[in-house]
Length: 427
Image 1 (tube, rainbow, N blue to C red):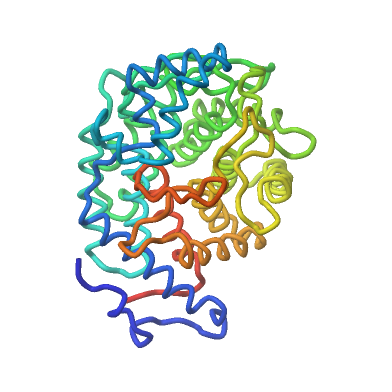
Image 2 (cartoon, helix red, strand yellow):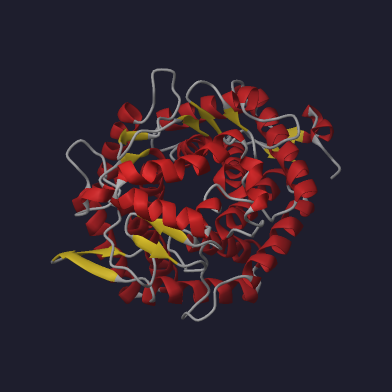
């Protein structure tokens, strides 16, 4: 991949330095981070292992089933897989194969589009369109519209999920990717995909009434869960299309999901992962980011003071309880079980993206995200361009790359930061 950062000298960038003095070097550094990662990705390709694929094996599913029902008995069963992940993550190649992940590919498309918008280079748009075509090819069939999930079986607290079950936590990234491609290119094929995805989101995701004016949106077409972040994803998409296409039915569904989110917010500003399920009564970093991001996005349409107040209240809790004294993201504010992870880079990536998104609404969030991005550059991007996956307690660094967790998220986060730096246009 040619045209690396050496080609982006100061004479090729129109910037008002009076407004960008503190960000100028950061813009160059962020672009360098993004290009280095893109070079690494070009060499390694888009098929990837995943931190959860090993748990989709027969043994992994069996061990988790026992652990969730009888922790003391199940702990010795899951320990070998935990040790494998911590000490020899590449050993999973003996048991599982690489696969494609829509969450990763959707965010990679969005990252390439960010780079195209920043640099005006055609190659980034070409990469986005090529990857978007591949993404379309492994959409899950049998539903009312295009949708995506995970290519592994998954045993969680609520039960067993078969591979290629479509999820509302995956499909929205594809929705945003195709929507941005349509806005940029005006190609009807992208609009058709957007409309198809809407059919899945509106009619396959289930509504569960939680109050006379509020409903929780399900995780998949097959459950009746009351999960806050899934409802936030759905509300964002339905509000977006309701306003774009003047569809009152979508707006009504979206409002009920939004009301569920508003009613689920605690007095301290936090959201539990799920409502009415003691097994899911935790508060963690990246799911809180998901809720705040989607609330901000949907409120760009609504312009609601109530939603805005909810965002600020939620962010105050997030800032107070989900960062440590050094400004690093904490995994949990309220956790279901003890963790061996000190720093999860997925959390860092989501914090950066959230801060970039909230730049004008909550300047403190942007300042924190900017510091985190610089910290990633200095400490957590490896020489070949990919990022550290996590750091365990005791300082052990996990460097085996998974695109879905957190390589694509970090690439997207870096380009999100780059795209919001004021008046920086790379030619």
